Amino acid sequence: MSVAPAAREPESRELEGKVALVTGAARGVGAATVAWLHARGARVLATDVRPEVHDLATRFDRVSTLVGDVSREDVAVRSVATAIDRFGGMDILVGNAGRSVNKPITETTAADWDELMSVNARGTFLHAREAFRVMRERGAGVIVTVGSFACTVGLADAAAYSASKGALAQLTKVLALEGGPHGIRANVVAPGVIETDMLDNFRADSRAYLRSFGDAHPLGRVAQPEEIAEVIGFLASPRSGFITGAVVAADGGYTAA
Ligand SMILES: NC(=O)c1ccc[n+]([C@@H]2O[C@H](COP(=O)([O-])OP(=O)(O)OC[C@H]3O[C@@H](n4cnc5c(N)ncnc54)[C@H](O)[C@@H]3O)[C@@H](O)[C@H]2O)c1
Image 1 (cartoon, protein in one colour):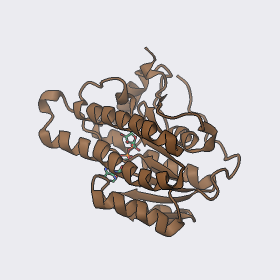
Image 2 (tube, rainbow, N blue to C red):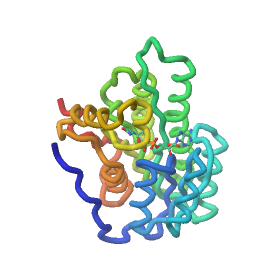
Image 3 (cartoon, rainbow, N blue to C red):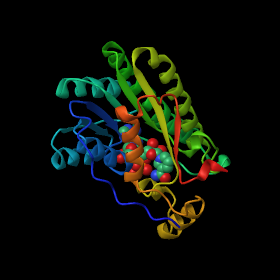
């Protein structure tokens, strides 16, 4: 089993002057991404349906917050407008908010399906569309969506989740195709299992679950949110300037077979 490396210190404030919007930022991967972008000098609007997102504004200067449900069109419009209003731009969108439901297909309800498509696919679409409009006018921008290994392989007992992440991956490729001529890049990060509160859906015994999830990855462990934030940050930064339309696996080798 490998060991997760310690988080690296930022090498520079390479994102100084950039404005980012991160959805699903109250905890987990979203919160780690806000910290990563902030440490490189970005100004960040962090949004979430959970009011705890406001804690980020007290922890970090240059971070502002907004509470709202990503699947609502008015929230997407307001979030992009607020980033521009508070920080004067919209350079980076991280479409991270997501939910999971883990049930066999026969127990998956229409409501489960609608909710996951609504948060994971529709919410990402609405925010990407609003950000894209602004980025196109400025002739530059970066969109990073947070998918899953379920973007490329189906996950048993996760039909709605897998379908929603497949939709998100296809959406992101189209953003790359339409965005290229306007200087807009768009990529998906496709993580394996990450040790976040999302795993609460599974647990009777969380430690045993983490071990069994870890064993399913060739690296023999699950990811830490900071490791995924590092990949998101790389794709959001100019260092990945020639990468667009890609589904970038960060899954400990899960999809290598
Ligand atoms: N944890 C994993 O094993 C795993 C694996 C692969 C991909 N992912 C993806 O990573 C992303 C981040 O997940 P995480 O592991 O940090 O989980 P998490 O549950 O800790 O964080 C998700 C955040 O999204 C927010 N959110 C949920 N529904 C929302 C809505 N309707 N509007 C606004 N915000 C909403 C939650 O409040 C939460 O703060 C998700 O897209 C998830 O699908 C997670």
